[in-house]
Image (cartoon, rainbow, N blue to C red; front, side, top):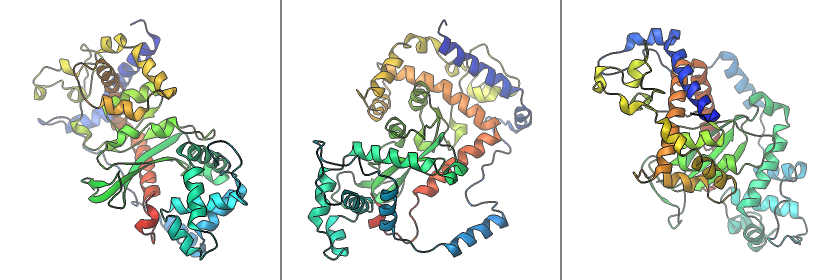
Length: 406
């Protein structure tokens, strides 16, 4: 093809398919083929909370017994004393905030809006120590989405310097997941969620393997979550957390999303439900396999014509110049990844860029699926990260909806 990057991608797809075809997994699983297609006899994923050892249960009980009750507001204030994450906050003009104690005020504002309590409710709880006006003005005038991201990046950097954070992960993996949150009826983003069975919106969060939250956004319930998958990575200002892999559930993937991940240099490894319903694509029409052929439609079950399941490398090469231009536009902030993916989500015969991203996504998704089926360690890793994210986004016991929606 003459393009080194695509030559490496083609070689990678070909080598992986041949490697999987000759692996012990293919020899064992081939016996599970039946007239309805290719199935795995023993593909199991361990769910959360299963096979817990007695020592792990004892350790959890010991931690619970020695844990004392701590005020969340005290935690926010102490962390603000140790880490000046609040310094990016201030008037848009860049002038001095003219607050007597900006650290304490911004800590209080962060707690107020972070728990969705609201300035008037917070002022009433503080019994006149601070007025609702003193909370709402800094919240409205001094804190923006941009400086919130900067403050979050500072916190992530300091967190990753802790020894305990390194025990959980090195920050190279991140998981994304959405949680339905109840809101007021007159909220512009609120709507009924068919998937979650509630009324409100989706808090879509990116959680690193070290349990630090990198990014969060509130989105409508009807939005395909994959549209916002990469915003957390592109807006990440942390220097210590630099994800190379991103994990999500079935809602966090599609063919254009796989293609965009490839161009961004990020490895997308989602946990896909009903993977047997997905199409595997050959790297070449002349490629043949001794054992995994049914995955690519090499049997009579698919009508004997598998030409549609071959990668169109010419289409990718034709738009090789256009794809990097799109990536540069995203990096420079000319267009957001969510806007691009929404446009690419509308399949159109006239949209050649969509077709190029889709074709590139076919290559990447086939590679990921082959690895997912043949590598038990990868399946365990994907499940572990996605379960970790789901556990992190779950509502803590004892918190009401008013304190968990933000």
